[in-house]
Length: 242
Length: 242
DNA sequence: CGCAAAGTTTGAGCCAGCGCAAACTCCCGT
DNA sequence: ACGGGAGTTTGCGCTGGCTCAAACTTTGCG
Image 1 (cartoon, helix red, strand yellow):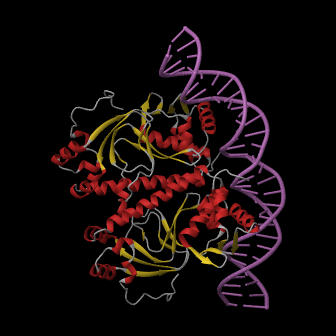
Image 2: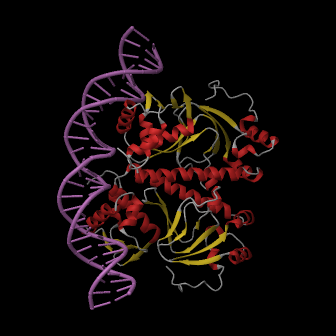
């Protein structure tokens, strides 16, 4: 994560923020300028909601830095994490799928920075900027695929396999290479992991402990490092040896 | 379901087929005519694949009659049903989300009829027909929501609740009123139900038997009638009395 | 009309993972 | 430095629902 001054709006937004991000990458410089001038930049502490499920979708966002979990809460208060969104993706694009209310809550997993625009600009973005819509819908499709995969997993795999899979996904998506392994570069609790894999905090903890004893992972409070990804891949595979 | 001559292409497609379906409903008559003239109509037997996961997405479809299950298969060969699509919806719209291959397999649950168009027409549909894109993306959003709900269910609910929920959804979406209850108007096996709720054929069967004894449902081979929807609603709710 | 295939029911045993409970450890604020 | 809250670990008992197994019923076909 990039360092930044907390609680301080960046003085002027530089075009380079957006030029290499897919939805904007094919745009002319002057368009990017316009887009940035219409944007509001904001910093979020870790663990706060950017927007809430059910609230009127008044703005859409581009996550510039940090990491966001998309969660929903059941009537009984249990949290379920649907997906993780890394920096560089759009967020809260309810309008793109014909909703006027956010379908889920977005919670920052780390301190994060996001640009946002009033939703009324959505139509003009789609109309004026070549490729913006296409790239956006690709994102929607990818997320659909991800959720779809989660359904498959939950339907067919054991808890152990699901947790292994979740770790693998996390290190792929946001792993940082360290000396002896790959660390998930944002804080993640056992609880988070359990919400991601539809199990209990306790079971997740037991699995991590067991793997730690076998030298597959190392974990501190809120931090997990995968030492032996291949072993996890083996575990994540249904029904083999052991 | 409407009666129709098996194995026979309808002689001329009538505009009324599409005029009341959301993606087309706001279009002018001449546009509908053009669209129909470009379409291929086809009838499918029950239980056949309209298209397969991973295959190049060469056509997109409008389901005119019947019912389709969207399924995926794991490496180990287990089927998981992601969602059900009723007549009147678009199908195989991979292009809409930036894919050039179908993300899942579509299997007819009943004898069905669908129109289809070559995917190369997709862009022109989006460009030429006001509202087509918007309505399409609404559909995508709805499906996303549905899958999302399935994740929530599977993460937090017991099998009994999930099966009750599935039945309720099915009678809402495609129930036919009969004398003493509501019948699911297409054939559905215990196996299908189990794939829909991520359980086993055996557990699904046991639940149905139990409910039948209590007079909540009646079931023949491949047919289920819900006699007491309210009781199912109670069962589907998490943790209350018994 | 009778057989085979497809679908359903029911039983019995077992175990993964949950619920509950308690202790422990790390981090942060004052 | 020390208290307290947040996060983690571990034990133990219980049970929902899966696995395996077998019989039964309906339907379609030759």
